[in-house]
Image (cartoon, one colour):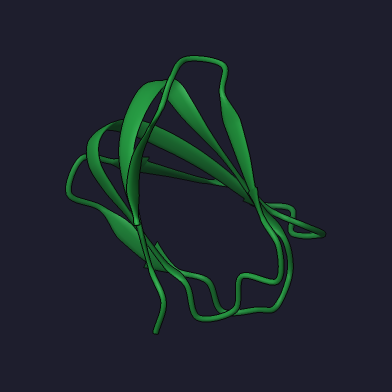
Length: 70
């Protein structure tokens, strides 16, 4: 699934274990529930969620994002 997160838009991924989050364009901020460190992805960066926690995504200001189930 690929989509655009506009400035100020957020998306909640419930129980995101194993989901690969890819930033294709722009900047993406993500925060995992009960983790103290957030992540910022630039175009070309990706991260795979290593826990079954919820994750919040937000475009800073915009981001083109893909979610890939493992």
